[in-house]
Length: 207
Image (cartoon, one colour):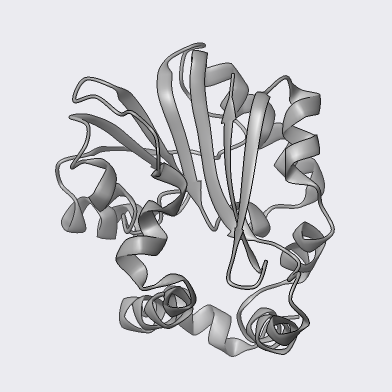
């Protein structure tokens, strides 16, 4: 069970940003962290891009530099209010990720950054199914999230972070094979890359 620090991190933007920057140092800083899952992708100015669970727009800020058609989706009105102020170039939708108000085969790219660990297993499956639905054939789903460290040195730091700022769903994700889950949904050519001693996973999966 997470401590009160979790609640504070969502209530106070400065605290959330500080935690994000600190955690991102393990991969070379926040700018590199926000673009890890986008490496190697070809995103055109007219590509339809969805920033799923966009939060306050930290990754949206990078996506709008590559496409003029970026949509941020989040269930939190407060986060969306911040995102609109931080990144006005994107459009925003308030909705749940497991029931997106979009037509089938709409997006070229769907991206989500450290959000899936917030979901219960049943929610996670629904979200992946929804991502598959709204992606165009040939579209790409990119994500970055926690992973069980492959280097034992990273376990203490990850454990303390999850205890302070996360809930049981984050621990559950550490036991989940996302590549296998994506394949069962219909995604092909899923590519997984590990960073920070294996504690962070980046996946690109094609519809």
